[in-house]
Image (cartoon, rainbow, N blue to C red; front, side, top):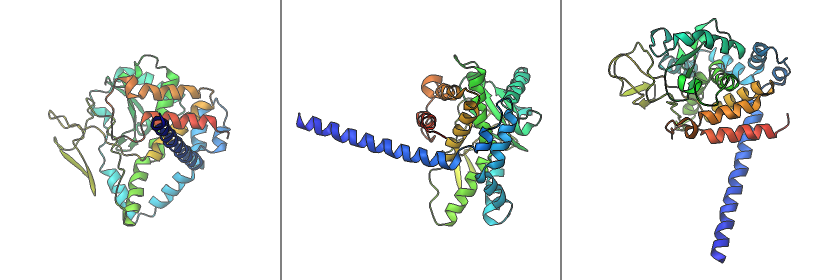
Length: 308
């Protein structure tokens, strides 16, 4: 009996320590990446102004833009790595639902994001898995959601607005470029490139038109590579890879939640994350992804418990 009690105490101690570590991590992320107060103060009937204020006041984005403008060794390496990432070509993609484009444009406009440019346009593609992502394009990025997400049971426009807002953060904050730049700086300091989360969350059956060669077993990104990024053998197709750090994923969640919170619909984003959970959506669990959906939900729950 004493042994059982001892084991229970050890388990409780470990669980408590893990919880404390999560709180410290979440508090640090919230402090570093939260939306500027001036953006939160924007009237709720002007979502575009919210995004402009949030992006305009973000010091991390300003620092990245300033650094990249130096156009020196590390900056060029980051730009080159980003340039070599697979691109999404909606005009050549047979999976894009052209019939749903007017609805997609309207949904994006509701979120306050411009829909008159391919750089920030929303597309719906045929795929049974409930997913969303922001692949790079020739002139910026696109936001893509799947029919599996759109037609998921319980999904509504508020949830979709939250989901596409998170993807918009990845694109507008230049997270892909930031990732490569941060890794270049870490490598220069002699640190091992680690924790590279190859975001092949779009994997499985979704194929995206490419202009590269017909077959890639090993698609190289400068000093590291990703293996077998879902290639179809019947044509020039390749799924987009996107590589984000854990902090970038949390930031996208945080901003999307703030966007919905100011509209009085913060709970919609939490429900949206649950919708993207493999257990709910029926998709395969991507063990390489970091953080997992449950951690992202815990983070947003932590955010809701904090006073601004």
